[in-house]
Length: 167
Image (cartoon, rainbow, N blue to C red):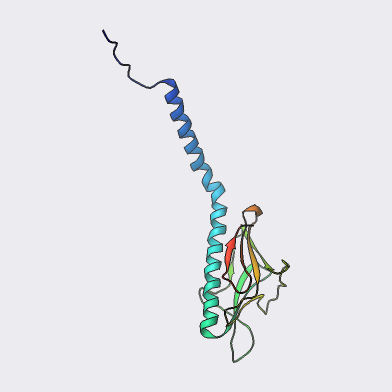
């Protein structure tokens, strides 16, 4: 006579299920903590890259020069050089109004040729987008205050498109 099959799970099967649930729970609980600053940095980099592309196209289409700068208070600002006045004027209209980054981030703007910081000047831009589609070569770092290892950099050599990279 054949013995009847046992019903239920073995202890090993139960332990495997508990370990899998524990690992999944740990990942879901820790991911907002470790991933949130990365997402904020990536979101700001994507936003700035899109604005740089827009202002570069705007300079070409309008046959004007545009500029970008960072001030001492942490705002980044956009500029225009109208052909009739030959003086830089700060842009105020959306999406090119001055913007302050969240407290968790800081910006570092450097010349991409020698990695020296640009001088902060309240009346002139550091980076110029020329009407012939060229740009002042630069490297803009978006740096988390708490962990600079998660920084992203937007950079261009002045002729190529502005790209973001991790360094």
